Length: 112
Length: 459
Image (tube, rainbow over all chains, first blue to last red):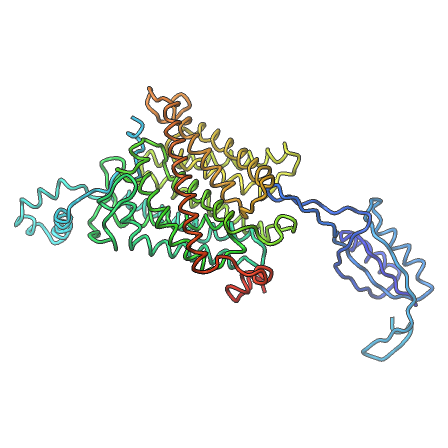
């Protein structure tokens, strides 16, 4: 099992969700996050006082899937989240040691 | 000549003696009671016929104008200023505005009206009618024509001006001054600065009035006065901790925009109400308060573009206020196109001041009370001397001399600045001696809402 963690542009979230759902992956977790990378923040000006915001709002998408699906899932996310501009985000893939469905106690891939 | 049209607000309160007032009231009572009473006192009835009676239309308009000016302060200015501070100081800012406005009302009826418009006095201060003594429902105040309005309405109308002026000053000191210090400062400042200047501008024997200064609705008394006071108070109080290195963006420009709208609407009471009658001069003040303001709002946005910024919501709001401030002395003293020019010029000047001059000088007039009310007020006061000219569409007489009037306008502005600066320094010193003036660094860090008032604006 692998955890796929993608940091994407907020307006790409629906596209990513649709792409993931099309692969038959049953769920994902989404959070609103802020951060910085190569993309520059916006400058705010109030009556001449300039403040540059160096943290850019992003969405963090997390999902766990079976090893056989990882390559396709990553490709689907990349396709869906890509706009071609700086700031499209990153995808990280991590090993997952165990998964457990709380309601039934099922473990491993059946719990996904 | 110049004074023929505008003169002072209520040029002079009708100085009816106690006896004539009593007669006037007796007449009203007699009229209600029936003709038999009048027949019994024919001589008295004739006396009464000579006394002007307020026109219900004028009275009705002036009552409306009075509550419109109240709306400028609460909730108008409270939301305008509140939106501009950080979220942790929202309630403190609004509570300070409400509290000083309420305090101003009580002081006004106790002795403020007497010092500004009392029947005795000289060029600098009035005297008498303390605790509104001698005023009855039948008492009247003069307007600029032969008409009169009820004196209680005049008292209330003028009261709302005192209330908003002290509230405007707070724009320079928000986010760091103790609540107790603000109340003491307000009481002292109204007494030694506002009432004398109101007397000088609006009372028949007042200094500016006899000089022939043009100030339709209070550009000197309210805006220059409040702006200069805010600057001096801000300098004496010191900067907010972290200013200007730490970002202090407005926490809700939405509320600032709401406040701007309320101020604009309320300002029709302020400007058109200053005609003291529902007449053509009030109508002129009304159209000018629309178009000067519209020009100023757009001029600020345009200036931002020219300066390489985006046209901003706060810029629009700032332009609107700058235009309203500038048109205040000119409201009934300008034609509509003169007012448009005045609004646009004031807007650009205020932009340069708050966006360029203030950062260069480094003082913390937190909400630009001086940058907009002071600077816009000065542009408006001097500009009124220009746009009054008939050649520019103003209501001045054919032989109106711009040059000599501008000298008078500058003299009035200079005198206002001196009195306001000196009086503010005294008032702040007294507040400092009694309260310590400034909150501790911990309180400033946590926010005044929590530490001075025990509340949060947003939960």
